[in-house]
Image (cartoon, rainbow, N blue to C red; front, side, top):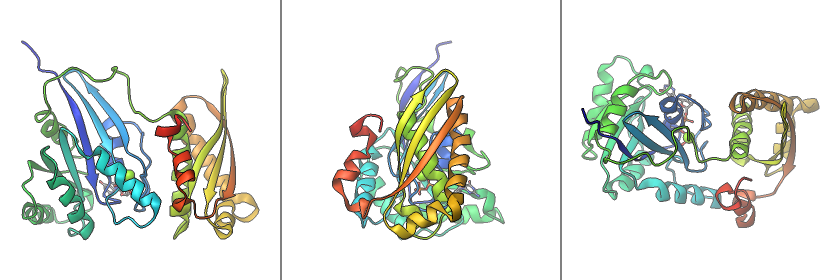
Length: 300
Ligand SMILES: Nc1nc2c(ncn2[C@@H]2O[C@H](COP(=O)(O)OP(=O)(O)OP(=O)(O)O)[C@@H](O)[C@H]2O)c(=O)[nH]1
Ligand SMILES: [Mg+2]
């Protein structure tokens, strides 16, 4: 029997906090994108590649679609638009909430694309009674002609097989685009910086998470150990006080939680040093934003 091999790009689009990055990690069965219970966690488009005997799917996780205010936000939305065109689009919604203006903004982007859009209703583990999932489907049916509706729980891994089936049947015939073991386009040191930022987001609140940026300054790979030095940038001295914490306690917590994650990723022991610096208004600073973009500085 001849088997049909398909390949292509699948963009994951939707409002902030809908669970796009959780879904990417769940589909790959490994962590390539950071996740936090706050909007605007993802700041770059991230590729994650799933290789199956009959298919290779390049998923693209994107920043949540939102009204941009700062220069950083505008760059995030540019990243969304640049990665929107794909063979199949996943429109990820939070099934526990009614459609918001951010959902309709995401839809107006999707309507401009030629690719079929699958409506993926996420967080159904929180929906009860299950009848409410049908109500959610009816609401979105009125907003766009979707190719399919798939209820899932990215967190629990429910519904992912059906979602993959719906994706694969819409992908064009074609060979694998990447080697079989290729997982993500992110350099390891960027992923390490992201894992540190994830812990900083999880452990701080209010305006601090949005003001945090992390850069890896040193990466020394020895046979037994990776030595990493990273700087956590914030925008104001008050934020630095919060991130450092009393007697350095907060910074220690962030560092040791991130170290465990980096060790899991690298499969090696890690020695991680962290520093905190104030970089006033970096979210509006084109030179800083440029310098922190690994796609343009290769690896920073
Ligand atoms: N209960 C439940 N929580 C979920 C599910 N999927 C994601 N979450 C939670 O929703 C929050 C946001 O998840 P993310 O994956 O970071 O969301 P995102 O869409 O990537 O967010 P941005 O990057 O900010 O656009 C996290 O706290 C996740 O644990 C799900 O299926 N069920
Ligand atoms: Mg995300």
